[in-house]
Image (tube, rainbow, N blue to C red; front, side, top):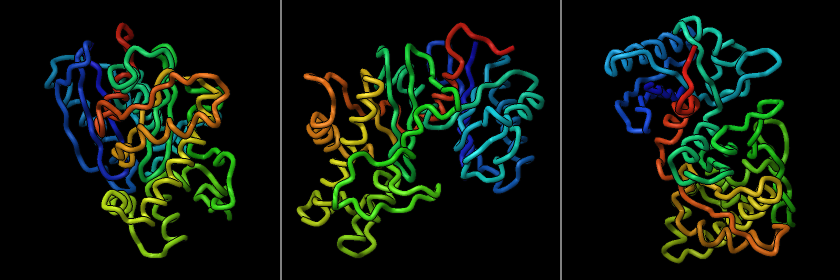
Length: 304
């Protein structure tokens, strides 16, 4: 059966159709209706109809969203596409499409994609990390996405930064209302804010990295602090999950130095005499989220 994946983002909605062996059959992107829940549902339905017309049959549908579904209410929570919050998105789409669908956080979809046929293919346990405008994570064990009792498995970005040092204080406030969340340090805006607090200016993460590469000492120091914080944060993941592979996605994952420098640091904090966990960049890059939504339906399973 053809598997359809949809990445329902704040500004764009993207669809991909995959063959049973993971080959991409089609891809299309449309603007997401801003603040209009009903129009968003219709956009998704229209894209599914388009894909099925092109691929010649009924398909399974998986959807990645920038939030999660509450187990308590069945409604969406914590989505930056705020028109989704408090809405029974899965139920409404199942009625509209006339079938069961699968719904997951976009970071979980990223992890699923990379575990299925990406940088973590063949590994028993994969932890997928998004390092971009925000910080997210997802866990795949034995080819199955781990959701958790509270539907927050892998919600790594809103754990506190481990072992804060004097240079980490005072702990910055996160938009979630907590202080010192990993996201406030390891997101792109988090790196920029850390640099600005120390040296002033308005450099974003990309320009900090570019300046460090040309020998700017302040930008190099900012990247070294970033790497040390990322290493401490991932060491906690290794101690808890002991993953075979940690895959990085998002804009900051393109910093090649992370794959050398972070593992060089994390050994100080991992409770083992050897560390064989591999740190890898995403194989599918920016396409991993939408591909992972399609992979929410493993081979052999069919929508009812």
